[in-house]
Amino acid sequence: MFTIGPIDDVEITDLKTYRDQRGWLTELFRTDELLAAHAPAMAYISETLPGIVRGPHEHVDQTDCFVFIGPGDFLVRLWDAREDAATFGRMYDVVVGASRPARVIVPPGVVHAYKNLGPEAGWVFNAPNRLFAGQGKNEPVDEIRHELNLNSPYVLEPGVRQPAKQRAA
Image (cartoon, rainbow, N blue to C red; front, top):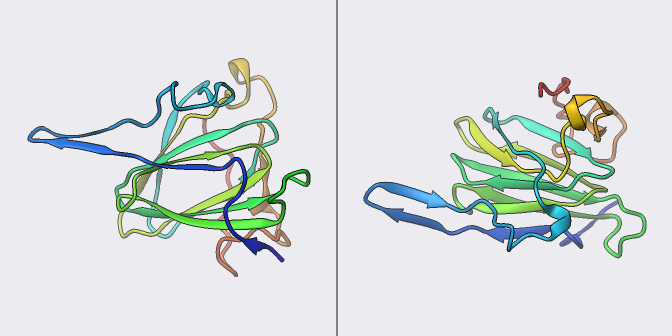
């Protein structure tokens, strides 16, 4: 059903961690490294428990700027659902996190999901270019929640469906 390979407009950037006797520092994003259309409107961090899958879902207008730095690793799966894209119908997996700190830019129309592969809770930072629920949280949420559809072709693990709850903002 899907072909395997990289997806146009998805950017995966390995991040450098600077370490010294005090600890470490990793730059998550810089405005001189992002397209103006990807400039963050907000930022949040979430915790995902071991073995838990988030998604799959997609956005109509929002671009996500995910950062996976650990603890632990995440399997990120992407599906190109943009009918006008050269990579329409393509699926791509990447493992990122503690073993490969990375920023993953996911444009609108690219379905995405991730799973915490580690034995401990993992953190994911996101700096999307749109406000969740719009200005003052008074607009519709820009999400198509494929995890709610039992017949969805977008599945991270066959037979595994995570209960989807409304996200607390």
